[in-house]
Length: 110
Image (tube, rainbow, N blue to C red; front, side, top):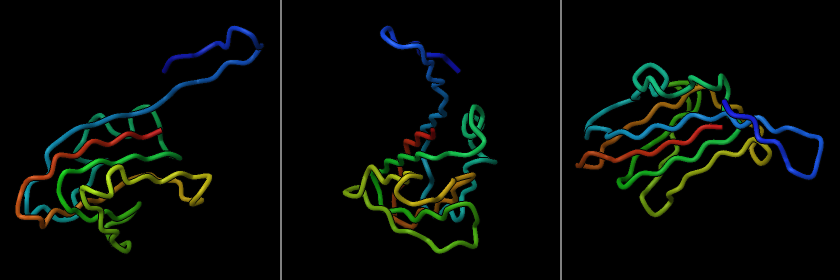
């Protein structure tokens, strides 16, 4: 975590985030990001901002492998979840890839 001090004010902003990049194999079902990506959810316990990029069509489930799936295509990238807009605090994501090819994933959590 780093601390940013604004040069003209008396406030400090804490900048904490996690970022992971990986390949999601074709045929992978309900891939548990928290369990399988050691660089995720390390610096933050709950994400209030999520940005997910993919180059293939995948599905995303939020917080539970039994949640409803959201389809995300490469043209939907980046798929974003922003707490101020959705009211959703993200503690995990579950990804499924049935695209026929490995999906390159870039995930930013803050």
